[in-house]
Length: 147
Image 1 (tube, rainbow, N blue to C red):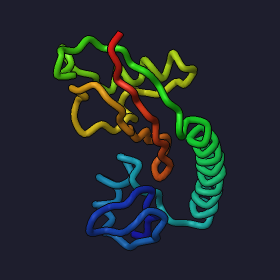
Image 2: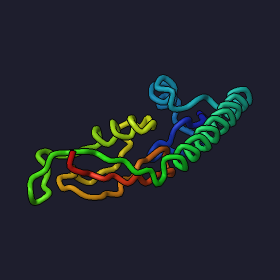
Image 3: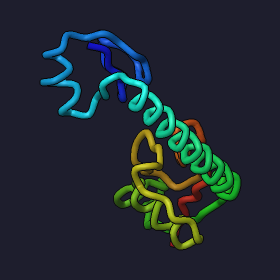
């Protein structure tokens, strides 16, 4: 039975490919889970239209992400935190703290989009990467200072 794959499937094929699979595999696994659609002229045309719409939507999201990255890139934020004489913080600064500081600066950034290898535990300047969209990143300078 010929089907058009809606997602990449290991050992079967890649998204958008027309593959020949056993009828039971198609009826009992691929079609109910919406991993594929039965191949035919109507379904092929429908799939192509859906792919075109998805591509337009993705292009629009990518353009918005690039604009946001350009606006965010090079932004400097100060995060006040108490520290001892050796500049070691009493606690640490994490992605939630950075997201809150960016929010106060006028940027709405989800804490899960901030890449931080480890919590910040010292006073100083840090370059933090924010992943806006897959392949689109911005670098923010974070200054951790005494209050």
